[in-house]
Image (cartoon, rainbow, N blue to C red):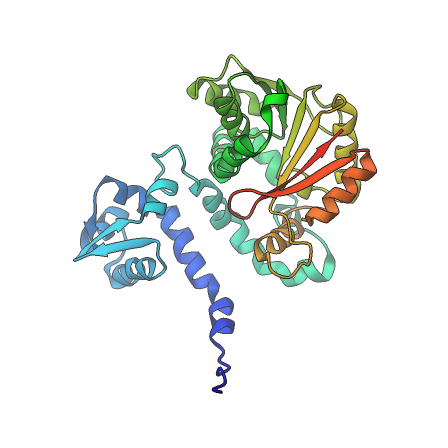
Length: 337
């Protein structure tokens, strides 16, 4: 029986994976996919539109073809179905905002992963005395771009939540840390009998309300201004926390779960959706790497398994809990009071 040869291929692909990552992030930064959404272009025309030097423009474009981010027919380059939908700034499903942030911020901060692992301290703007979120929330334009990016990132997950949860038994819900309102809007669109709220800091209100109007659900969605650590959570049938718990240390996580339990009526539900790590902690690399990202970005945040979340929910008082897969890397834990 022939033995499978041992090669260094996977090691090299992973070790130099930042080459392909940076090529994609740079293409998003340049607006390459938005430009090609207008019409396919040859290398010379595309390089001219993007103001690129001719020396390596063709290598750059062909690298994106080889990486599956572009397609080429004859001399002309065009978007793939995925990049046409998700990386064209003119499309509602544009999720390039999160990649723009990754390019501008996270790419360099991850260069300090070794220091983060040795010190347990964040490696972002706090090292130079800055406050990313404080600055972000003080700049309406940057804040809107960030919140839109969160919508692009969560739309697929939101649609699955709208389908999988038994919403007929409920009348109201609130999304805690709602950002632009991507999750709340998808649920409201799918279930006309529901009324909903989005809770976030006051600066988010105009962005949330504008998005609700644009999607024609403003009569059933309202904005609840507040800090979820300092104030009580809204009293609704269902509370949603999406990519919220992983920002905080264990004390913060358990406090939020207790506050959710206290706010819900008997029979009410809490939905926590995150890039949950698999219980064996062996194969969901995205969730594990997201937890390392929380090391880079926060003083105490970390990602967790479904089993972890169930244990914390039960400690908070929830009796019935389930874990279900959603879209992409996300899963949800549902706790019933």
